[in-house]
Image (cartoon, rainbow, N blue to C red; front, side, top):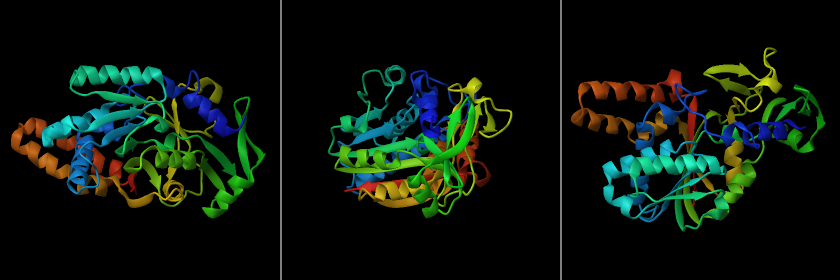
Length: 329
């Protein structure tokens, strides 16, 4: 079995890791920006308001999260929209693209608990189901969850009896490796089809995504397994693939040059690539903190400040994570 097929079954198969709910944060296998601070979603809410005021987004746009897991990020965005511009909740639409019915149920329940019948959450199994004229798409850590091929010196890997063997010829992967000047590493599968689907889904949209990686391709393997906040390189001799299959998250560093090229090949313009630190500050996360300081107790302010520091400190999430933003109009 090619590694990309193996990874697909690991994450998205009938009993795959993403097919059922797994907690994120202290009780889960890993942390994300969403699980760190609500102000991550608050900053995105401020950006949405700015894009509405600029006239790019319509007042009745669809605000849609892709791969929402529990639904926390979209809920945080809605919460801050209500605080900053409450009238927008009367006109904007809110949706989630989620392929798994079990997770759709979790998200629906969370939104009902959080907002009652005030927010009508729309669900889609795929981008192709969306019916909207204007949308803002948001995704957090989605590109590292696309299946990938493992490439090593002209061959791609397959999995046999829990071992990875590099003995398959792939001219397409060789061409990709040559383009990005790498003789080994991960080659993501599906960026092109994802970009094509988004391009066809809505005539006018902005898409913002956060993930870890670089604009230049790594010249080594980054693929790894996260389980209970411990990280294991996939090629660690201590790892037994058959024992941990589908029980832990498997991921790799994103080659943002590949992401950028996939979207630009569809005529979708890349308008920004920045570190998470720069992106969140530009979107006003410090302004939100300043407002909180005026209205909340010192104890609450300090608690939130410490959480935001994790998001923007260069040695933590600030430089490691990147934001990329695309526009189709």
